[in-house]
Length: 532
Image (cartoon, rainbow, N blue to C red; front, side):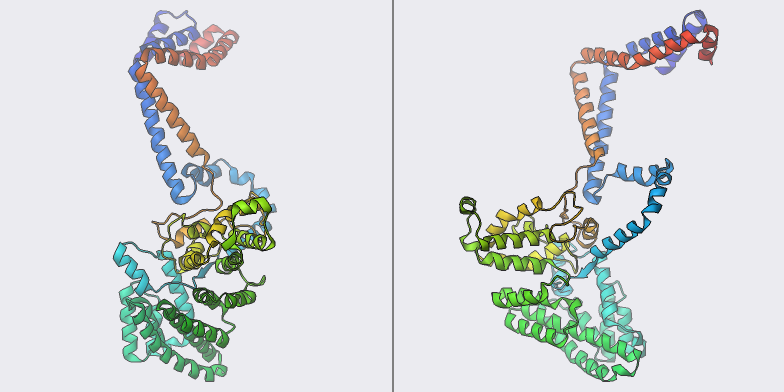
């Protein structure tokens, strides 16, 4: 069709060389528009609607998976440097380099990943979930962090001097679970190795009872190593490192034995073991044994003991956790929740005890805003990961997985939480440039949680992200072109008139400019330019 249009223009030029070039172009354009049939407009609008719909679907999928717009990301990452965006901002970047480095260091510290103090047993719990559902509850990133933890806690530089420890040093680096288990059995054939028993208890035991039996054997071997290295720790740096490793191994074994007792229903025994462990090794706070103790005491409904533990660990100098904040809120809610009524509170106002409970809930929700949806069963729970991110969705899952039963046991506690938790967000400044009771909510939690949590879980995001511009734009473009395609199909003649009128109006400024240029330039020169 375009070739016909060009031939006719050329023919008019040859046959009528004295005609105005602008009038020739206008006549050619009008003739081209007249040759377009309604089917062409239907095909054009339908194709445009299909393409924009495909772009919209892809943009929506990319946004749901990665939390950003694909077009926006490509524009910022690839097009902006080509257009000189980096050079324009180089002066600003040089002036604020110190501030940026400080903020980067702050964001890294805020998004530090912690070992989950209530992590499950990989063989007896995580693997059983996989056998039943066919889903993997742990991500590769999470298991890789656990492997790094094991190498840090259970190995030292002198392991190559002892054959069994040398085998286990390689086993902790092995990715294949069966290879790790085989290496642990090989180490036990050489010697009674505590870390080999730990690996078998964590990964090979299919029940908690089997794991407890293996941990007891590990305790016997680990306690002997700890006592020997304790006597030699001052003989040199090598012996000191070995004693530090043996201490970590012993603490880990005793803590897991206490967790086995808690899983098997011997809660009082578990509490005693945890208290003894905290007294024997008071400086090893990195294991966060007090969070295991809080959960066990709540199971016993020993609320006075829970308050005593909170008084010791809910300190401003210590890093907070969802367990500490929400347990403190639960204790204060317990004092008023059985008689709390939203209607009565709105009529007479909140009492002092109710105000304290509401403030405690607001404090907990500000620290981790993801927890209430799991406690109120607005979102489904999954197995908690082996590592958590403070204030993130992973920490919320780990807390609610073990503490939901404790909230349900306190009459009216969930009702009070349901009535008051959303009021927290009215107190937090927006955008989140500063917090109310804590430092501002970190912006990196979504990325880290997506690495820690399995793909079948919908990660909770705070604050809710607004839809990117390109998703809204493609949605509007898809809707508009689909409507045009439908109208053109139903009313072809009428839409053809509208299309011609629209194109005529669109080209009117161009025709005006062409006429002005023609009036200024000589006609012969303009004619030669149009021929070229």
